[in-house]
Length: 218
Image (cartoon, rainbow, N blue to C red):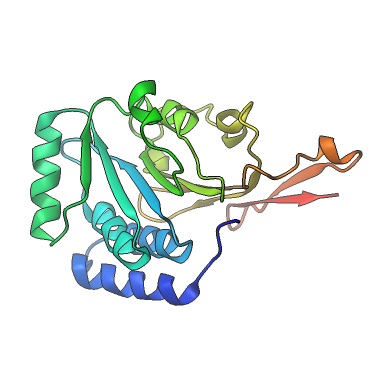
């Protein structure tokens, strides 16, 4: 079984996020991320958040989880962040599960199994490690780095995150939305690598106008 796209669910989540956030001055990140999480029928949505961060994207993920009937979990580093996050989401009418602890803690991440949709903040120094530690769903997963323009790690590459994890990058795209979104779609755990298929190989092509990275098998 793999992630299957539902344009109808994505559209509903998009519209509901606009209504919930009243995004007259926002960048569009919340609606886009919400539509993706809902459209892929995500059953476990995980995000990282800390004190002072914007909560529009979090509201969008909460909206998506309602449409999919899935679980929405937020990882925060301390009680101050927890209190602020719970208050903001509560005012919007949502009460996602909040876990306090460093997101790059291996034991904490071990408790979150079969993640379908993961959103991390590229401004945090631990974002790449969080991606590496995530226990992704056997159906496949969508990984999102928000605030990619302000990324702490200039050497970040998706292949480095996925190396040695028996997962294959289906495609990645960099979108100039908000402060930058770097998105990757990861194949199901049952996917066979190109080397195992004897002779076939994967070729990457970067469209410099759109920012999309296409992965094609030859």
